[in-house]
Length: 442
Image (tube, rainbow, N blue to C red; front, side, top):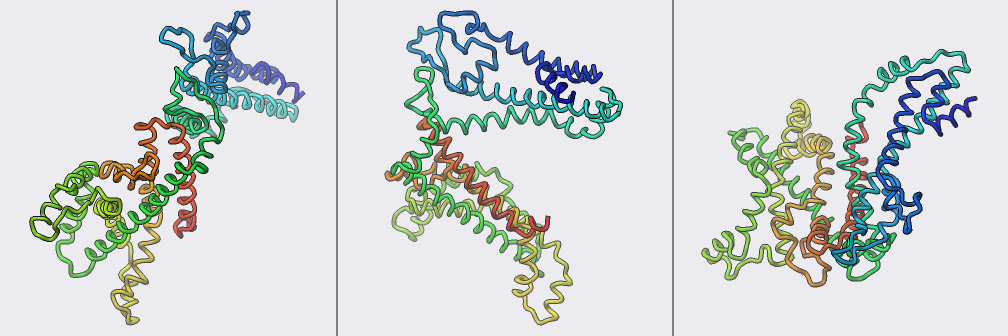
C-alpha cells in the first residue's frame, strides 16, 4: 500500500495524501500541480500538437520552450530586419535557465509530496493518527526558521544564482564579437574555449603572464600594507607617545576618503606632467619625468605603493584593536625574565596579532586578487604590451575580463577566465583559511 500511495502522488499530486485521509494537505499539493500545468498550457500555441506545417518547440508552453531554448539556443537567425520569426540565442539561454530553476523548485515540491504520502501511510500502518492540521503545526514549530528564509532564498536564486549560471554557461559557447545574435546564432562548443586559453599561444601566454602578475600583486599589496599597518600600530601604541588619538585620526584619513577619488587624484599627480614630476624637475633632482604610469615596472611599483597608502589604515585599526586585548602581565613577565622590547613584541604581541588578523589577511589577499579599482582607475591596465592579447602590463585578471567583455566583446573568453579565476581564488583562500589557527580553533 505504501508503494501504491507514493505512485498515486507521483502522478496526481496530493492523491496519496487524500488516500491517507489528509485532504487539506492533498489539496495543497494538487493546487501546486495545477499551477504548474496551467502555466505550461496557457503560455504557448502548441503548434507541435496542432499539426502545424513547421512545428517548433518555440511555440510550446513556457517550460517546454525554455528547455528547448537552453538545449538548442535557437534554430532560426534573423536574416534581415524584415524577418518576423527568429531566435535570439542569449534570450533563449536566460529563459531556459529561469525555466530550469523554476522546474527544479517544482521538482523538490514533487519529491516532498511523494515522500510525505509514503511516510504518512507508514505511520497509519503503525497505528498512528495523522492529520493535516497537526502536520502544519509540527512543521511551523520545528522548521520556523527555514520557512522564514525561504522567500529570501528564492530571491537570491533569481538575483544572484541565475546571473552566475548565465555567466558560467557563456564559457561553453562561441558567443563573441564574431557571433552576435540574432543575426548569428550562438552554439554550444563544450570545453573548446578553455582549450583555446590553455593551448593557443596567443591566449595562454597572456593568461599565464596576467595570472603571474595577479598573484604577485595580491600577496605583495596585502603584506606590504599589513607590514606598514603593523609598524604604525606598534609605534602609536608604544608607551610615551603623546596625542595618540590625533595620530590615529591622521593615519586613518586615507581609509576614510573614497578610494575612487584618491586613485583619480594620484593618477593626475603621477602623470608625466603631474605634480610629483614637476616638483622633482624644479628641484633639479631629476632631468626627465619619471614614467610612474607609462612604463611597466614603474607602473607596477606605483600601484603597489598607492594601494599601500590606501590599505594600511585598515590593518592599523585591526592590529590596534588586537593589541588592546594583550594582557600587560604578559609583557611584565617577559621583562622579569630579562626580555627587551623586541622580545616582548616578537613573543607576546605578534602571535596574538597574527591569530586575530589571520582571517582578515586571507580576505585581503582574496580582495586584492580581484581589486578592480586600484588598477583600472590608476593605470587602466596599461601601459600597453604588444606581446599580450587584449591586455596591458598592469592588467589583473579581473580588469582583463572587463576589457574582454566591454571593449572587445569576447564574452566566451571572459567567462572562461572568470571561472578559472574563481577556481584559483576559492582554492587558495580555502587552503589558507583552513591552515590558520583561528579556523582550527573554531
